[in-house]
Length: 216
Image (cartoon, rainbow, N blue to C red; front, side, top):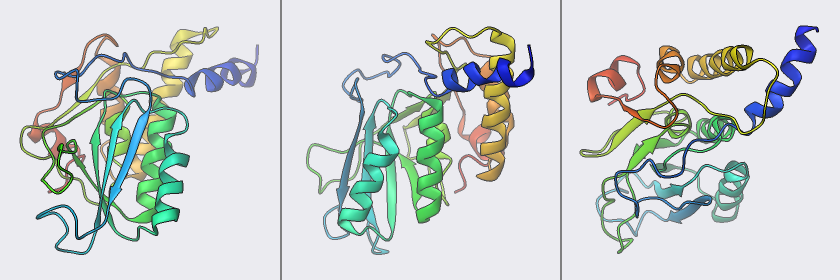
């Protein structure tokens, strides 16, 4: 079997790499089904928009249509500058990287936090697990709010592949290339393979800075 035949199904499976849906310490912090997009203009959120940037909240599971859904909001609202807050248990790794590329294309900053009940208030503590840190990496500047956390684990696929080892190597290779393009240490991709997919390894702030995942 040629490498092309080996990796073709693996590539298809990679598009469906999913993480468990109940990894958050706070079960109310994330939406279980899809990534919800909410965008607020600079004059709404107190203390976050001194530079004229919008505040965008991405909350929930990173599904395959997350990036197109965000792109539609950006186009409709004409969002030129934004800080994007993530609160997500993970989801599709491919979708996460696509989302990250979209954020980089628009020059947005990223942070981790969830929208408060009152949208005029500052965000609350959030989580960013599994595929989420890869989307978070798309920010041109990346901040981690006090109390919020980043975490990784091994990618799991729901589509059988002929060679699991080759599939995992493909995941690490593509994730490493993506991280390097985002200016983040590709070691993060190797780090995720060392954690069972039913667990989450939280990154310390020092680790996140060493990897350049957090830039402040």
